[in-house]
Each structure stands twice: as C-alpha cells, then as structure tokens.
Image (cartoon, rainbow, N blue to C red; front, side, top):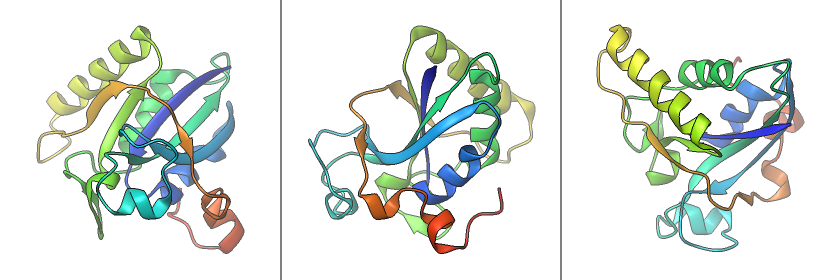
Length: 155
C-alpha cells in the first residue's frame, strides 16, 4: 500500500472524490503543511497554523496508479483558485499535492505541467507541490462527513 495526500478545498468533498474509487483502500481527513502540532479545526480556521485541510489516501498501486489519483485530484477542484474553493476562502482551502516520495514529486510536477499547458484551464494553476509532513487527523465528526450526514459533492 502507498499513501497520497491532497488538499483541494473543504476536505469533506475531497474525501468524497476519492473514497469509493477502486484501488483506494482508505481515506481520512486532516491537516497538514503547516507548523502547529496537533491542530484542531478551530486552530486551522484561525489562519495561524499554516495547515491545509487535506485528505490522506491509502491506495493499492497494483489497482490504481498515483497518476490516476492525480487526474482525479485535478478534476475534483479548481486548481487556479488561490486559497479558496467556491465559497470557502482561506489558506486552509489551498490547492496542494503533498508528495511522499521523489517519484510522487516528479509525477505531480509533470501532471501539473501537462494540465497547465493543455489549454483546458483559463488561468494558470496555483497548486503547491510540497513534501508531505506530519498528517494530523481531523476530529472524528469530520471523517466521512457526507456519508454520515448526507449531502456531498456529486463525485
């Protein structure tokens, strides 16, 4: 099994995009990319932690490739919006790929470059590509939120 970590706005919808994909064996939402240990949702929303709302995806690379996960990442949000997705605004909603290996870094950079040059988007991509750091699991009520409460993002 391997891990992939993506930030693409509110983590509830991003988790929806990945959790039922064949080859994805687990997802969990949390906070990463910042400087505060053990942050809470309230901490992250204060814009003082540097963390993004993110989804950690555990996947079987024999069933789904990292590149396929990247394709889904680009499809599930607007990577041209800086520090926001739709009505959600703030640095915790930034677009980011947190890579777990040099191979993932290269794949993410190549994928971003291909999409940026494809002409499919009207603006330049602002997605951050950064090394994965500690992933702080979000509070239990955030996990599988739409599955437990209804709603969702249509993925």
